[in-house]
Image: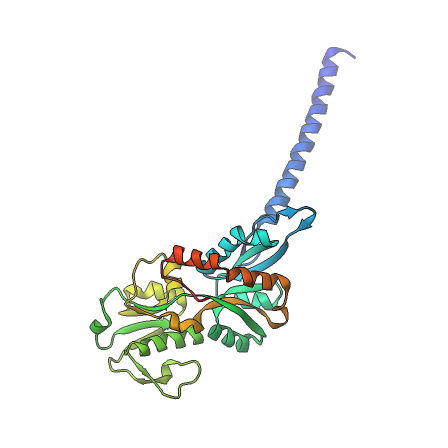
Length: 295
């Protein structure tokens, strides 16, 4: 075989090898990309499961909605869970309904975003047997305004934005009543609504909005009632005119799961970690009173 033919044959062999390698690279890249994408309206924040010896860490998937719950879980995920053989996978949702329906469907093992009154209402609405383990933190509900500097300055027929959902709407009305802006009926049901207002001396015009919309309404209303959690999530620097105290711990967020899963060792272990004294220190240092630990 002469030199020219030998070179030609070598070129063809190199081309076939290179093409095969390139194709394999594309297939591998495509598979990796598809596996990294989260379906639907959720995203999962995971930390690789370290392996001690031949034993892999227990995985637990926890649903969150607000940034505070996520921050606390991330702290536990990175600082406490590895030593306890637990791999916490954080699943983020875009609304307040999905974390409970995902629990029902088995997509997650627990969620960390709701307080007891909200959970009880969700139990009825979604026909779920939900149970809360220890409470963790309170994001105080506050009364905010860009138009007045104190509640004494609130004018007649002032517009007030409150939560539209039953549990947080009740909480908003009770804060307004506690601060003397309205009076509720004496024998009000467990969850008060605007129909339960017995006296409204300033003839407040109450607008019921979804949580994030309340913050956006600040320029259009005289007062807005929302939690410190929403304020932090929106990056709002505005301080409340008045807010709840630790006495309102019935509204504290806790770890929630299905009743028949509450004794799952992974959930019990996570519950213990979430009430560790180091988590209390983290909350106090990070939020400087805007979020209150209740354990």
